[in-house]
Length: 233
Image 1 (cartoon, rainbow, N blue to C red):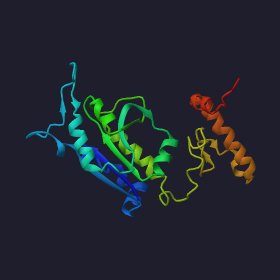
Image 2 (image 1 turned 180 degrees about the vertical axis):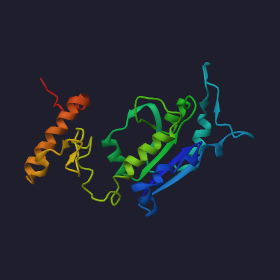
Image 3 (image 1 turned 90 degrees about the horizontal axis):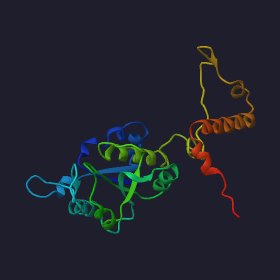
Image 4 (image 1 turned 45 degrees about the vertical axis):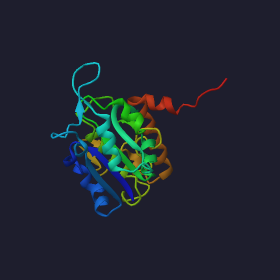
């Protein structure tokens, strides 16, 4: 079973959308499991403090390394094979290939930061992998964690209706996905491309490949740059 353990100051945010649709159905069928851990249980003093002022001064507060270490150690033993992820805007961008690799493993331990971030020493001390879902700032790591988990869960065997249904989606081939159409045949004067109604599967496949390339060229040329083979001298 694929297991997600989330360390957060707001466990009530879970399962949230993960309890619905494909992910929720798979959770109910025990295809995967979700455990939330309240970081404040390892907090210090009467008020269960988890943060302190930043060394060197500056705005905001920083989550303490000792508190986070205790929370991580309580959530999973040192020999737990699952990767330990820290949702962070400075992390490596989450890609479909990384999602697929995570989905093929045992699960993930995910730390959701708040405030200005975490003490740098916890990252090295517990070998955390920083992961970003985009070049923008959220109030905390919880929404990012929901995104990562959903992306992984939908790839687990038995979650999607057809095992091949994700093979041609955006990013799986390195390109954006081709356009989709369904009934009615005519919608406000816009008709389904005739080739999709031809029954010629070879021509349809070529059309879809061409459209995927056009969309990627127009919207994400950076993806095409990654696909170009590197030349050697």
